[in-house]
Length: 437
Image (cartoon, rainbow, N blue to C red; front, side):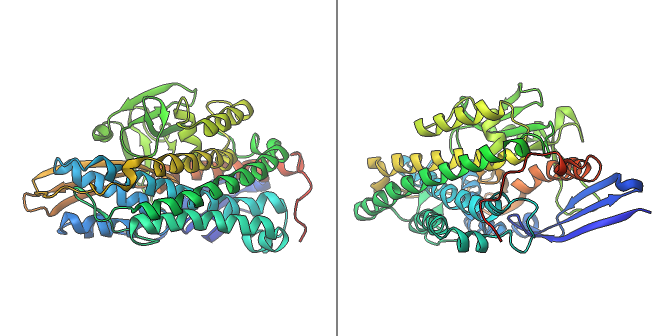
């Protein structure tokens, strides 16, 4: 007798999805699917809008990483109109994205990942949540909330809103940062460094305790994609798109505008989200992963010193390329370190309080532009076509979910086979839970 395991909605992620695992005789895994079960239609309802409005509408794609969508959108508009904003505006935008990395990576580690590790994967699901973590580790809970708050308040200061920012406009930023605001944020970012050190220590214990699980459960080869600036880790601004093959070779390193030559989409019949793959390798061989782990795979080094030390420690343990799905959580902590370091560097830059943050006059023009930035969850691609009146005539959006959905599905398939067929949970070295229910 065959049976079907359905998890809907799957909510321990940044959004909702549906997981279906089909088991045959003797619990043999026949199929595993991960589907996005809601429609968005953003590409169509951006058509006919003024490009200035597109920049405000696009962040509504996601309530977790609206800053990244805002910046990908404004970058695409400015390329289409051949506009270069003042350097202080670009630095404010990068600071906005680094602030989002601080809040998002802290949120993901403490609220979505930590419960499984701190309580153990065999604990009852009703206990594996952030409420239990805060109840049993109140000090860690307070530090997590404080770290997220620091990042989110900086997002509010620069973006004009804590969620769905509005300050990036064609030609620059609609508001600058005062010296008083900068001084206050410097105090907070120093505190963020302390909180990040605490988070790193906690993450190291989790990783050390669960290294057997991390390096064996849900491990598989794939392609990897991420931005890099001459090989250095970057999330915004000057960069190329790097692709690494499963055997660790950089097989492509191309300008943002050329993405359609390397990227293709596969339509799965059970999901509204398309599966992105590396075009030269075809589907499904060319499916890839985006986000923290792939970004650390494709880059040669981090941009800041503490993050570089963290990267070395990470690679010493899991190698390069790392193909262990659960190592995403460790990679996220390495990026958190860099985000805090980079935020401090930007806040200390005199340009960050400059009032020269927007061009005096920007004229719409016919053209098309590609904006690519790294959201915390993965690479965002916004491609807009504009007419001579500044109206969007077409939009192509490829978000982190599209990049990752095929490999998320493969992770589920590989893990399901390990659990149901190989009984791997009986073989793994599971430490004693740090928290008791």
